[in-house]
Image (cartoon, rainbow, N blue to C red; front, side, top):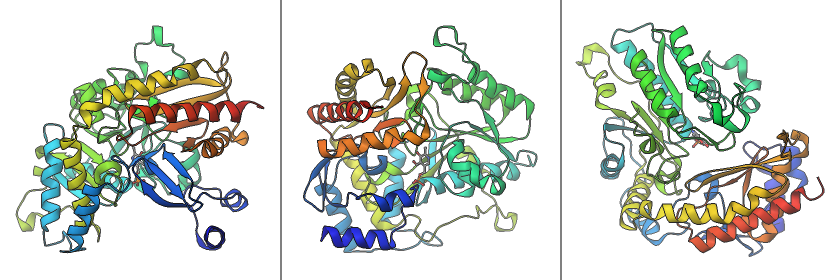
Length: 449
Ligand code: PLP
């Protein structure tokens, strides 16, 4: 069966963000089952799911409460629309989500992926200013190295050159500020002497584009896809102040960081910041079904209020937005977060993971280990002293994940950064085991380099 599936995969499936010629030359791991924090492949081998199936699985796989909620919903209604109708599941889901949103965020617009949640945030921010008579505010500011999805709008505000370069002619112009990447500061600063010039650079952009900026878009606390780039304390707070001073909305993209990933329900909490718009997706359904949300303050929502003839409609909507099955999964996942006191248990788990990773920090090929909660990036370097990166062609991150498989874990690289994004449900012992496997895989993959 395994062989037949591999052949069919190679014949038909085009994988996302994948160099297909390399894919076709390799033996793929075919996931067949989930079992708690483990995945099982078609050859019956078990792996710790070290990346929560692309950062979205919160409670593990085949969680009885979530399975039951989806099954019960399936017995009532598989799909309906939010265009002109409401559904029980979508209302209850919005209510559950609103309960945990940062104070001040009350309005929820559903969609189906992180990228679309961001796309919606951009259109909403733009239209918000238009409706308030501020027609000049049509530009966005974002941060280099940011990742907000792969649709044209979300790529436009994204800042990972490798993903975006090829599409440049299709994108709209965005003002980008330097990345707060302390290990390789683009402004040439060192942590000891830094006065957060990266935030100062955002201020310069806002000054330069005074009165023209609709919103500043940022991943709060950690830029995930560029390699778990952790921001200096106070950075997000500074951005909030700058947006307030310059009349721009602050859009915080919590698609990766939301639902406990960084140790608190939302990353923005750690900076005491409430954004004007917050986007979330991945962990919303516990990693079960596609659902995303763009959440706003009353102030943003009120811009869209007006009589029929005023045409204040927000012209956006997807066929599957607020799908009842996805909403049922989200309700069950949000309830589990509360009932199992998942967030309360995270500091001890994060500490156990940090402790287990500590010996790895001394490894000659490890430049830096960056961690916030259960979100970890281990940056590999050719030379610790000079911080010389591995050349792209050496594909060292990929070599690490191939070494990790026979050791019993699924990991994912981001270039030269090895990522750990385990389900929040992992026990401290499992987190230690995962860290051990990552360490051993790094040792093996870099031994001959
Ligand atoms: N925003 C952030 C911060 C992300 O990390 C991602 C995906 O990794 C996205 C948006 C896009 O989400 P999706 O893949 O669901 O479109």
